[in-house]
Image (tube, rainbow, N blue to C red; front, side, top):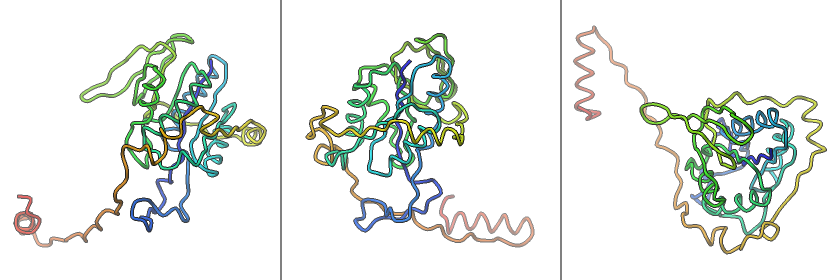
Length: 262
């Protein structure tokens, strides 16, 4: 079985995010970048499938030099090879542009199965995975929280839906986007970290992927960030004192006259 995993490098959820000087991006100075948390669930699912059926796991990442750090972490976990997707023409791509780049890379690898996280915690649009599936002409199931293998070509997946859950049968090839709860991602071992240094990491640009540069990048973007701004600072809380009756009376007054929610 050949499995592709699509990962994104995102700012750590613990990082203090500041709006950049252009007002349309974040200030990256001092920001720690990590593998998108939902992609970690995808990576673990791929490794478990490899352990069950054999084969190889290829991980793809789009970005600059820093993305190699995240790809190397995936190699340390057990991925067999990594592919960096890098080209000046890729800069400024929106979700569709990113999906086109990833789909072209995955198509060349000819995998039986594609895993990715359900959403990137930075843009939070949950669009790229399903777009990749559409561009590849593969069936997909999103927000997967359960995965049970029938055999090497068939599996059952479960996911939560509004008011309940559903189970679907999937025939490979397919694209699955992972949600929290699918598994417990492993940590890299010292042996894995050492072996990762010897595993292949290839860099591919638009020409290598056979991509028309006019279909990706900022020039082809159908959506653009117009403005970014931090949320309004929270006001200090208000303490209400007195006995129970007085506090209830004052609370009702505050909610009605000051907060104006009653």
